[in-house]
Length: 134
Image 1: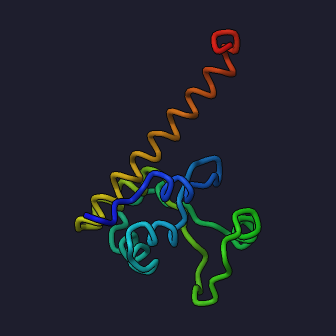
Image 2: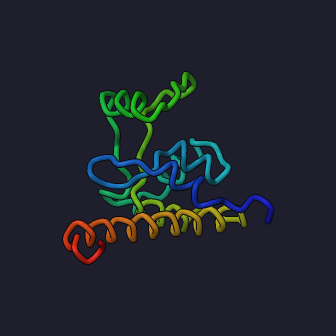
């Protein structure tokens, strides 16, 4: 497959929201090469796969902050606020989306979150034991 998703493509889309690392629905759609409505329809059609905490809602105030902080473009076509997928929500989404691109994208997302966790652990170790890293 020529369209292999790179780590940087995923890691650039991960943001902090409500203390969690998330990817907004339109960024998830971009990664998977589908429209945002398809991502949100998958969530709507499979409510049992997305319990509380798997997909976070964003209010107008939070979206305004995200828009200014991350230069998220105003999307005049969108009538709804974006949803934020946690790592667990992205895993569940992966069980719904099919195809070679979906598989490659899911692998890239899993790798990005794993690297983010490893980086976080390393930073915590360094801050807890600064003498070991001199």
